[in-house]
Length: 610
Ligand code: AGP
Image (cartoon, rainbow, N blue to C red; front, side, top):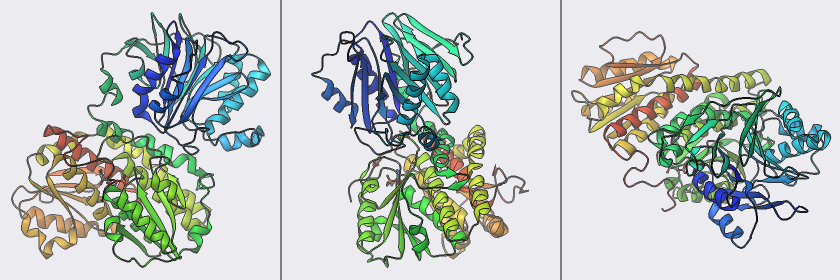
């Protein structure tokens, strides 16, 4: 989820673009770059400065450079392909073409082969591949429109491109597919950006660039042309949002925005790792030997990442029939764990900086384990120090409460479990691709849940009045309840406890009083009746029960007060819609209590202290 800005007009382009990148930095901030079209150096018309680090580093580096320019493009990067390096930063340039990109090119490997680009690439990015394709066709046709049309006809994936052609001064060519671009014209010139925050200082009148439409910005305005060459009139909109609410995508909190970004985050994490339907980690350089040789798996993480690991454990043991252990990192460090060179250690961390998880990983490595980290923040310490890293592509997670990071961690674990099953001969090709297809099918299921929030709001009305609450389930449902309880307590401050449903009668049921909210999760068919009988026990003692089941389960008022249903999908995949339901219950409870949802008391987004 990168930040993109283009400007052409009468103002100093470097200042407009750097200021715009600062507004966009929340979208992705591991590197930044700028390309300016010089007015006074026809022999060297494009100035480029780009480097790893935040926009402030770029601003510092460009401070001394006097560039006479009123036209340029800028980019803040949230790496998906390729590490966090100066070379991988955008803009990318070759010949007369300079480009910035937001999105994921899914067929870039094919394009490298079919256009023999291997030897000419200087970065590790898919964006540079797109640049070279456009350059190839620009040289062939000497026409920017034809070059762009031809290129997007063969490029597959999500993209928003802003392109400078060095022999076409003052103009910026743009096109998008899925990834966002908004544009507007002010009396100071024309602008285009990933979102409104970069436009608002100049204009509140804007349009969303229609997909597969070529926009050409020049100082006096913007013209649009579809791929058949027809002129397109944009639908003009007026922004009455302030910058803060734009950064939240119009949502009241980052948490709700990030909850709603989960379908896209899941898609972006899964799709680039599927080749012919099978998990493929060749891009990550993760060898199959890692999965063949291990005797057991050990998962290390904290908080939500640990609870993702609990789900991963259940799925992996179910499929692989090898021991999988999950460890709270702060405990693991002092347990003298039973780890050796036959242990595959999976280290999960959104930030990649959690000190307990990092130190736990070091202990595992010292004992001979090979480590794969599942990390969201590119270039973070855990990602760099683990033997291998499988990045999640959730984009920046701003809210302290982890939501989209949790579901993409699960997606990464499902990818690993499936690859391991295939490599170890547990799954054949058909079984492995059928499994991954079911994971992919979860994406529209999550979208479905996000469209039907009334039930979760209803639960939150009860929850916000409570002091204590319980989340119960058995097997996988218990693993889901751990994350649900954490979400609720960390942002609404309602004391929530996750409990194995079958264990309640051994003491804890004594705490159930009249009106105690209990969220019961019963999505696992083989133990459904068992769980329901536990639910009856708490209901009989006066609990206010919210029951989450698959569609089609007949349950009466003697079982629950609120019945939430997820689509009828296989047991192994119910975690995804259930997770979204539990996130929304927590969110609406905290919001209903008027609390600071994105920055709960006492908490930090990344716990870098012990
Ligand atoms: C989750 O909502 C919390 N913010 C917290 O438990 C978090 O998951 C934990 O601190 C681990 O962080 P990490 O994934 O960045 O390592």
